[in-house]
Length: 316
Ligand code: ADE
Ligand code: ZN
Image (cartoon, rainbow, N blue to C red; front, side, top):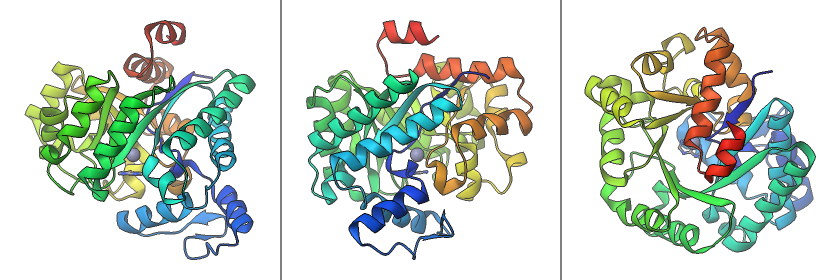
């Protein structure tokens, strides 16, 4: 089995329908508007984000979050993952009355349990949600910068990239950069090349979440290749959310061919009926990657991971 690594998964989006239904039963909440027949139901990006928020609302205690994290990491480790970085959202925790500190410590507890069971190494990337607004994103950055948690090693921004200008969020990324955190930002998913370009110009991240729509601009593709920016590509997410109509039209092979550093990740796996190992399978079956090329995806992820050099060397 090829060793795998994940750089782009939202922890709240990794909750399986079965786990969310168990949580719903525990808290007496009706989830039939977005979960039926053991599957999530939504029909566009907006309703996906709503289902995501509704599912997140059912994780309310530190133990709920520890269990979610342990389950996610244990499952991908079983499929050959040696490393995972996932996005955390203090915003979502705060909505259920959990402080950012206890939320983060609960996730860390799940990480420790998974590591002791499987050996999987993992880190957290605190994210702000762009469409919630700049103030909330700055708040998330301040938390990430000041929490001092050894497993919080990055800062990012998710949500609807079409909301607000990049400059609105510059301060948040400045705060995170000054604290020495790794930086990544969602761009080039629902926004075009100009969104990727302004993210690079404004935030100077080493990685871009998705970034696939850079393919629409040759000069931008060349810049990404030359600057060694790593793209956290989530092929099945892009198909299910309608960024591309079919996998044969997905630009990952063309981006790789143009010299961009690409990786594969699952984004919000049960929402998109995928998993990290399925993303590797897709690279093999639809993009024609051989084992050497699959291993190169993992190596690129580890090279771009927000970890200390001793951990990186051990993983490589
Ligand atoms: N939050 C969770 N999944 C996301 C995605 N695919 N794009 C933007 N924000 C997200
Ligand atoms: Zn994402």
